[in-house]
Image 1: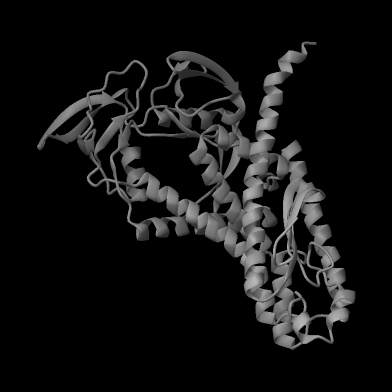
Image 2: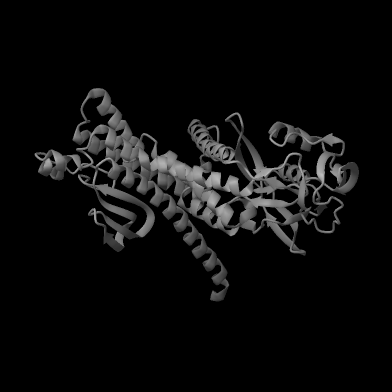
Length: 449
């Protein structure tokens, strides 16, 4: 056996682990800093701020007496406030009893602080995750810009073997006699693409130098890979952004619509693809996977997919996006992640879709590596999506999670006293068992689904 043959796989493994640790560390640091800073503002003293669990690799103490540390297991983190018995903010009764006679000292503990201070400190973690995601999505919207109206050619995707007649600066008016819809009309664009005839060349009505004219160019949406879905069949097969698919099972392909139809008809059977990459043919074999796709109405539809997104022949000219529009877009993307996650979970619970849609640490790590390999923008966007998911997960009303603590605080607000310490301990144990069970189940999905 040639041990050198394992070096590329070993390099890929370490790359996946490193990107996963980076993504998770950023998200956890922001989450825990939310707890820490709001707790500090609320008058609650933080004893330990830890990035990671287990043996401490580095630590230092600041002027406020908080110990900052990095631990060996970088798969989470915690803030231990004064009066906490553990990282899950269980109550240290002995520590609380020791300062019970001193109102000032008691006020600095997590369990002796006013209800509003405790609630604000707990909810701050998920809120900081959401805010970070909004900031990232907003920054990306500002960087990318808004497509100019009317649609104007900025550049053309270099389709292999095609000499383009469209030119930068052309204003697009119609394709094959079908008028161009409004740029923000999603339904209109679907109807537009559905009406286009599937043939190698189409007529484009453009405004060039102030005059309208018709030019003939290749198909509007060629079989071009604009992005690869992490963890998909395409990603596993090594398909890359920028690849052109020229044949499927020996049949020529020139339009992305052809590819979608042919993949759906195979019903999971292996496919032989011929790609053009940097001017060279590449052959890959893969099998489509049955995927539950979220719909605009909140439902799901199941389709056979290989996990790629197509793109237009044209890269459109953009203009600067206003901050208000970018912020609205960023907030909308966070809301879309939250709503689709909640919808997906509810559909899994009712059995409407497969529980294989739930990814565990292996699946998330693989997605980290896949998105990082597609470039910094894809990786940063992935961090924003994952940060939203982490914020949402922590709001679930499960004891030991932030949402569970908020439920205890809601009980205290209604009843006028905190729940019994023994009952809280039992519920916290149950919550930890539920979380561990969910992690094991998700890990099983990563291995067997």
